[in-house]
Image 1 (cartoon, chains in turn purple, cyan, yellow):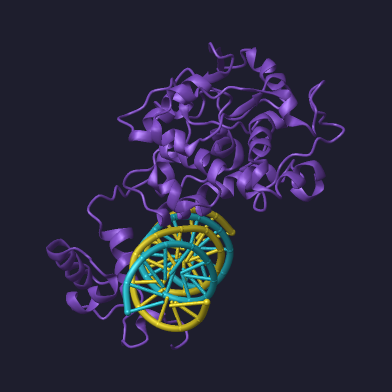
Image 2: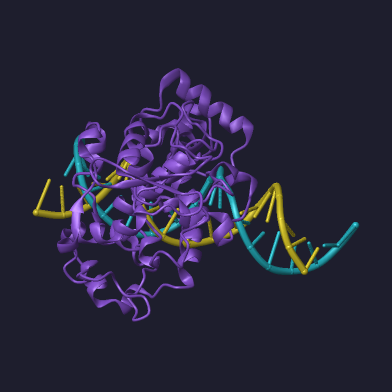
Length: 325
DNA sequence: AAATACCTCAACCGCCGGGAA
DNA sequence: ATTCCCGGCGGTTGAGGTATT
């Protein structure tokens, strides 16, 4: 096989690069009439000088009739962040919970939008994971998922599953952990807060274990600050609402629907704050405008004088943006 | 207005696992 | 048991568009 060509293309003279409208039409017509069947024969049957992989990719990522396209909504963005927090860079798995979205789309969105903001948010006051023995040790084993997740939800940890990509805070002397908080034995500080009963079966598959939050860290959230309202829930966890951002959603897809419910119940300060452009230099690119958080509603980040940085990147996000799109 | 920098995203690359031969 | 083929996936690239200087 020549350099840069798939094994599936080695016997063909295949076209590469962007697809023309004519090629799209051929592929759509063929698949609409016959289904795709074996992708390796699709190009021949459809009259295309492309390799099967290219046809498959074009169909899945662009031509499929059930694609949603367009900008990601705030709910979708929030769900992606949360799922990424759990699954890491498993874009295909994440995309399965976002109807009409492809793994490529989700991946691009993450790389060009969310990740950038997460990192920008943390560069100024975060230490590399490698500086945190207790944390980095926990990243070495998938079996420590519980601990990682606990850490993330209770301290300002960016996606636990991809700590190689982002930064987490150090418990520096000038930034001490709450009194009584055991930095090593995190589970000792945590209690379950994720209302699993509100999840449907797919969500249970997705979140096979409870999410934990630190009771120590919850305490400061009981205060009302600026326009934020911290609402205590029956399960002792909280969520935030803003004056112009009451949690409400529009016909969410299956998981997003349950996700919405759990958010409302679960609460916690919202992870969306770290991608708030007003606070962290978020650009206002036209392609991400749906993702722009509300301004002036009290969600431009936690006041640093009140909350420890560890609290500023909560686990569950999005409800504060629910009414903003 | 032109040059440059930056951003987005469609498409490709290479690897992997599963199944058939 | 081994090889081959295929679909699927995550990482990466680069063309084209947009913003900035």
